Each structure stands twice: as C-alpha cells, then as structure tokens.
Image (cartoon, rainbow, N blue to C red; front, side, top):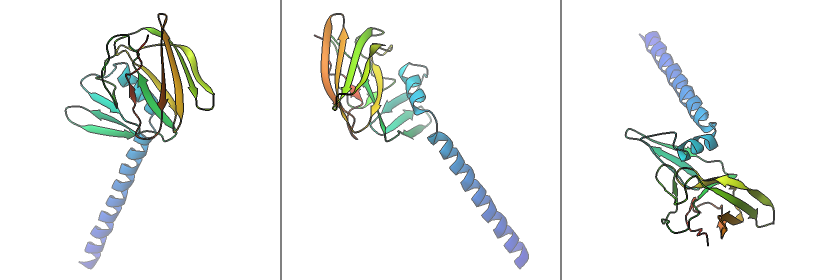
Length: 174
C-alpha cells in the first residue's frame, strides 16, 4: 500500500511539474511575439469583432469571450497621432479598433526630433483608415513633432514616459 501511495504521489508530482513547464513555455511564447506586428494588425483593421486598446505599458485585446493583455517592451513607446483640420475627439489611451480621426488615408510630411536634436522621423507617412499615424519611439524622452498636410502645419511636444498618452488628438493643422 505504501509503495502504491508513493508511486501515485510521485506520478502526481511529475504531472504537476510537466503542467507547470507547459504553462511556462506557453507564456514565454506569448512574450516573444512581435508586438509591433500585432498592434499594426489591429490599427489597420485586419481583425474584426474585437476591441484593442494600448496604454503606455500594455496592449489589451477583448472579444466576446476573453480578455488578453500583452506587456510592451520597456525601451519603446507606442504613440498614435490623428492630425486634424476641423474634427477631433478627446483621448488618452488609443483604441486601435475604435478611435477615428478626421483625415483618412492622407499623406503627411512627418518630422520627429528628440530633446537632444536627434531626428527620428523625417518622411512622408500615410494615415490608416482610422485617420491615425502610428509610431514606436524610444521610451522616457520628450519629442518635438511637426506634421504638414496641404500647406497646413501642426506642431506639438509629446513625451514617452510611463503613464503618458498613447493617443494624440490635439494636433490641429492650421
């Protein structure tokens, strides 16, 4: 009887260890996914019937059955900008599947410079169907952003510190 009990206990212990290793492997697999690609897929409307929002430190995806949270890397910061002429909305954390900007699929000349004068972006970008332009910038810095469209310009200072807004809807083109 003692041998049976020890054998069963040993088998249970092995099953628990194996189950923990499988769970750990699955978590590591999620952690190594290309978060930039996942965010881009939500921004460009590839997924339907989900709600995806992004804060300074996590991507939150919710559907009718489940809620998944993905941690973002510490060294980069996601920010989405919706330049506008007449219409905007207040926003802090960008809803990748719900926020809608005024200027859809338009070309903008974008210039982003950090506080030390280093130019990170100096190119033409096209806004998505949601009217936003997405950027991944180094964390814990302040940036000067200049956006030009149709002879109009918007300038703003943004920061990429923890807790900062990921949705910029305050850049009015004048």
